[in-house]
Structure formats: structure tokens, C-alpha cells
Amino acid sequence: MKSFLLLLCLSFSITCMAQRIYVSPNGTASASGSSWSEALNMDAALKQAMSGMEIWVREGIYKPNATAGRKATFVFPAGVKVYGGFAGTESSLTDRQLGTFSVLSGEIGKPDVTADNAYTVVTLKSEGQDITTLDGFMISGGNSRNFREGLTTGSAGGGLYIMAGKDNMSSHMITNCIFEKNMAHNGGAVLVDSGRPSFINCVFRANKADFNGGAVYNKGTASLASPIFRDCTFEANSSNSGAGMTNNGTNGESSPLLIGCDFINNTSLLNGAAIYNIFNDNGETQTILEDCNFVGNDSILGDDVSDNGVSKAIAAKAKQNGGGSLRPTTVRK
Image (cartoon, rainbow, N blue to C red; front, top):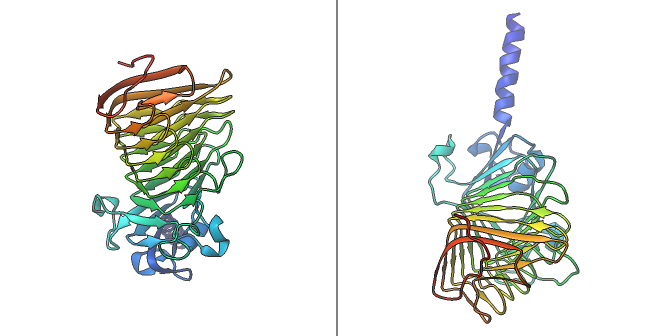
């Protein structure tokens, strides 16, 4: 009986330890990943991770495996919680210093040459209702500027591609992250391909789209995209339309909720210096803004928020200080 209890306790201890994987820039594939001194590299950690596990990532720069060429990307398994910004001595999440980040970079080719960068730095896939958490990362250097029909890898989501798909409402959590200097044809930093992810306390800075969605493109075409953005900053992003965000509900629905967000010095060549909404008679786009600020945004048509026709629903409670104007049809109080 005592032997059985001892074996049970040992099994429980090993299981608990296996719920956390440690990663460092100098980690190896042969390490156990059970402590900072036995840290794995990122590729090995992602191969071992399963739903319910945590990955703790030490400060440093991480790049996806370049053997896949420009299709190289970090694919985080559904249901895994990934935390960055550790110094490499912590034993608790609360020991982590706020404002520190681990860098996930698409610079897999020649230094300072963007043409050979990874199309998409991070990919989040959805399986059922498993929620993936990404916290404490700077994501930069993705270049998905190839023109292709539709919103696909290589043409959208330079920094992050959230692949939920039709009828999947996975609620991934992206918190305390910075998206900086990513590029794409659509959705310079992020493509939300359906689903209901949450972005909390994130910064989208200096991202670029050749067409729509300099920072974020919410794709609800023939599906539903209803992401939440809380206390986020969209700054110095640029695009043809919707420098901060584009919401596309063509033949479906795109209904983002933005709470306490700031849009600062974003620039669009045509419509929606901050936000651009797209829809048709068979679809709906409803952008809800609560306590958001618009400062110094600029577009030729002069609007901070605009659409491709007469907006079906733009609910706004916002402050506009300089730059363009808001064109809401209803106000949420």
C-alpha cells in the first residue's frame, strides 16, 4: 500500500512539473524543459506542448525555423498558455517584471531585409473551445505583402494569424503584447479569421497594410468575427483604408468591441484613418466603441471612422481630438 501511495505521489509530482515548459534563447532540443537551467528551445517546446500546459519564455529574440522558408511561423497549440518576458530566475508568474517582453521576430533571412522575412510570425489555430493565451511578447518583422485572392497566409496577418474558421468562436487571449513593424497586403499586424479573441493592454505600432487594416483586419466574411479590444493603443499605423483597423462583414458579420482604446497618428490614403468598415446587403458590420480616443489621425477623406457605403451600425462613445471625424449612426451609453 505504501509503495502504491509513493508511486501515486511521484506520478502526481511529475504530471504537475510537466504542465510547465521553460524556454530560453540558448535552450536546446535535448533539454528536459523542466526548469530554467534545463530550458528548451522554442521549436522543441511547441512540439511538446499540449492543451492545459504553460510555456514560460525568457527574454530574448526568437525566430521561427527558417527551414520552412517564408512559410515559417510559430504555431502555438490550442489551449496552451504562453508567457514571455521572464528574466530566467522566476518561480512564479507574479515574480515577472511588468513591461518586459520576449521578442518573436519574422527576421529569418538577411538582416534589415524585409523581402525574405516570414509571412506570419505567429499562428493560432482553434480546436473546439480551447483558449490559447499569449502574454508578454513583442511580435515584429512579419511580411505578408504578397497579393493573393482572399485573405490567406502570405497576403494577410504579418504578425499574427488567428485561424478560427466558420462557426468556431474560440476566445483566445492576447494580453500585454506589442505588435510593431509588421506588414501585409491586408491586416499588417493581425488577421482575425473569425472567432472571438480578446486583445487586452496591447500596442499596435508602425504596422503597414498595402490595402486594408494597417494594424488589424477582422474577417467576418461568410462567418462571424467578434473580437474584443480593451485598453489597446493603435499608433502610427498606415494603410490604403482603415489604418488602425478594418472590419469586413461581407456575407457574414464583423462586430468588434473596443473599450478604452486610443487611436493616435494613424494614416490612411483613402478611408478611415482609424477604422474602416466593409459590408454588403447580405452582411453586417457593427463596430462598438466605448470610451475610445482619436487623436491626430489622417486620411484624404478626413474621417477617423468610415465605411464602404451607409454604415449598418457603428455604435460609438468616443472623444475626437484633431484629425478627422467620427461618423457613428448610434451611440452606446
